[in-house]
Image (cartoon, rainbow, N blue to C red):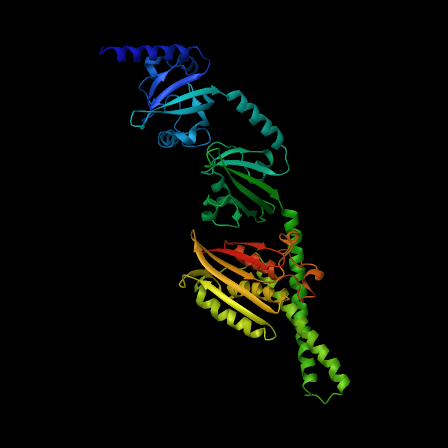
Length: 481
């Protein structure tokens, strides 16, 4: 009687073997150390290993390479299967034949548990999808190869997997093998964000500039890079895809506009100041008494000259800030204390408004490293907008300060009219103003928010808007600490 269970087990094993050997699929089992415990005849013929050569051997280094051709760590993947088998119920990965040839297999993996419900083995059933993968890759290459935009695919370590003709031309890439895109762009170009930001895979979408300044050997090149980090079916970050657009001509045109604005604002500065000063002398009677009618005209001149003076000052500030040569100097600022002082001054200046301003900051020793002048420009412009674009009798402004994931977040929320959805992307553009029928005839040149965005991005931060019509707008600024 004692031999009966053993005989049954042997019979079951034999039936299992006969069944698995009759199918045209790879069937194998591996233990929790990744060692092969079963390898059907189809698997032996496919991979080129006899049963006595593969049993007891680790799948790593035999049928699974340590890393795939893109640099992905397959050894770590096998280890993770033993810890989280539920993540790999269906999985595609690169494998390796005995002769070293790389192939792609679509695997179905099922855990085999012991009596205590602990993982004992993993049953793996696979089918060769190499030709399908190659067909898809060829189709992809056909689509993107001649695009006017550069297309680059990298692994998470920035090793180049694919680059179309345009991308190779832009970045001078002759051979892909063992090339790091990160080192190519950092060593040969100026990049508008830091190495740390480029390597931060928690941010799935980034936009930045790659610039090659004009020299005796090369023309100037200005590339706009749009980076996306893709996830696999397990929700794990997998690949980096970068689109490159040649913005050289647009940039040159922008620089001409910038130079023109700078010239005009400087040329207007002196005569505007003279007109303003002369009008003030007339107004206060320093050069003679005025009739009532004359005083009315002079008061109008003074009022408009102050508006013109403020506009020229804004233009000067904007052209200075918008210059790529701007020095984003840094100094530690205790944000809460600084903003209490700054906002107090701003609110007192708006005498004709009933304003309730609150600063919400649970941790009052938070520090940001940036220029005080630039922080003042950012906050004062946002608060100025919150006041100007609000027709309510009681204005409410709430400033929030918090820290999350190594970033300092400042939010400015108001109870104004809000911003129409179609204007979300436009409001950060130069000279853009929301239609007057919506906001009222509000003075300004549409330079405040572009200036704010330029400063925030210059310090490696980001700004975005949340708004609901009739219920106000919320600007969210994220800055490195």
